[in-house]
Length: 111
Length: 116
Image 1 (cartoon, each protein chain N blue to C red):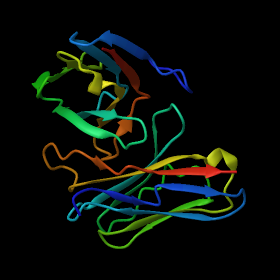
Image 2 (image 1 turned 90 degrees about the vertical axis):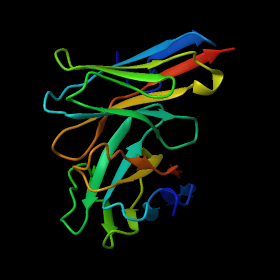
Image 3 (image 1 turned 45 degrees about the horizontal axis):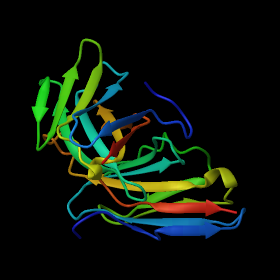
Image 4 (image 1 turned 180 degrees about the horizontal axis):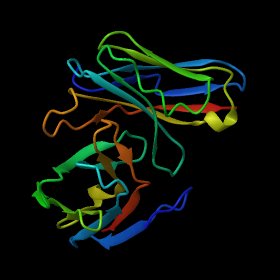
């Protein structure tokens, strides 16, 4: 889900668990999707992207799943580590070349 | 340079003063974006430059905000007569020409603006 202000959706996991962060997008014309990680005091850092002609893409320890039917994107992080603690944003872009960002999910990894 | 560089990293200003924020994009990146991020919130689009085309200013919140870019290099975001509501982190991003496969966007570390 999404929220505003200081109350970001939060996912708490134990170190070693798998994490799944979800994102609903709004524009059915969007054809490019990106996940970013933002650590405290830093700018967003690119994690992985996917185009609309794919439904799954894998990186190192991360997988992005795209379900265009329900306009849903997810980021799966395998064997979550304390260094993965951050705010994660999804972004969508389609035609305008201006990415639109979701409000973010805070991931907290407990050692 | 190796990444997107923004300066200053922190700026404290008095209400009513003007401020200028700078962004040096990655060399060769034709597209440049400015976003605003308020505490605990997502990224709010402000303005987009693409090469020598007219910028997309649709996200600028008021006429106190303006931005310029010289060719495909440095951009400056100017906020006139700052208000406390302008306090936020201002992020700049650049990318290769849109339409290239998996072009992505690279962000700078941002300028944290505090209006007192």
